[in-house]
Length: 456
Image 1 (cartoon, rainbow, N blue to C red):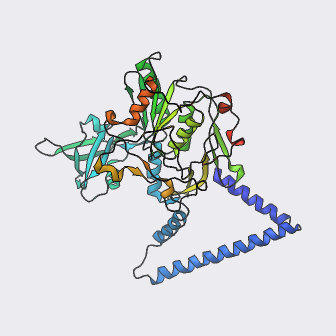
Image 2 (image 1 turned 135 degrees about the vertical axis):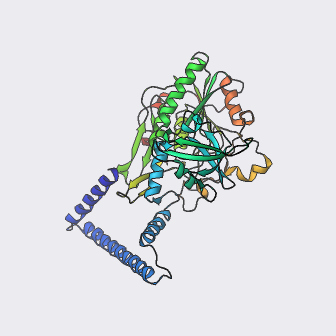
Image 3 (image 1 turned 60 degrees about the vertical axis):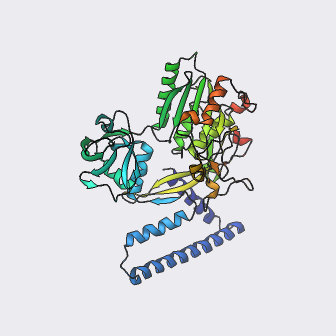
């Protein structure tokens, strides 16, 4: 609806111009507009000529629909790295991903040597109830060999309508022969929020993505951790956003809101000034002002950066780790009608409460902590960042940054950023740069952007 309204307003503006043709300025603008329209139609005629020549003269008969899709894809990918065309299947997959809910088996899997390896069964799902274990190798799905399928193809086969059955053949280390098991698909919710008690008195929360389940998952874990530890004993929370690629803008706003009492969270600004939107926090910090540490790194992007930026600007949290990815743009999903897929179109930049644009620059942590990376992984533990992407939207002149460490040790005892967060919350170390309590001006509901221009 939003995009339709904008189109209608633009059409009205265009009509208004033609009404004032007696004004010299309007005549000039109308003439320019006509010339631009004429040139556009000439280019469209050129596209039509090329399309017909390919259809008639290409060495093999092409698929017309694929030609059109390829042309659309080329047009969108030529804009920036995040705009794209999604065919009907890709659109459905994206909807499943953002909902965080689907009909399936409840297995996290990866591809290894052409076979599907179980990373972990999700608790209380068909997979966990059937006894499927981490490191199991899935060799066939309903009698069809997995060898030769891509990971996405295999996942598609495992997903399906709730209450339908699928037979898996599994190789398990230590088992004499393959295990066959028949599972009935159920409604699976992706756990985007995981939590644990750290050191007996700290609540550790990791958010892996921002889907429709994230805020409710966060609220649930905050309440659970507070109950487990006890409000009097609880030193604070660690919010781990490392290697979180982002997701839904609305979820980034509501996650930020969970830790803030007031003030702007983020603003988005499109091509037209009237499209600017500002999102503010509602009263009620769910942690009741407990100390908060946010962990970020080179893999923290988009929605993760909105949360980190808002909490840093309001001096609500200390950020520890390495510079974030630097994706400061917003994409709108625009459905194209039944069966036609959708456009993923960059429509705005977002700005942190203090007016910062992090586009192609990222968010600098308050305390930089570099991890000790195993020698064999050093070539693969840095993320190049938004600024390295071909065709990226430009950031502030002269301030673009690229490259940041994104390695997280698999064993928590080797995690230097986590150790730093733990020491700060326990008072073992004091951060001279730690944010002072947010003053009234920083938390005022008046949009910060009125004083400082916002960036993405």
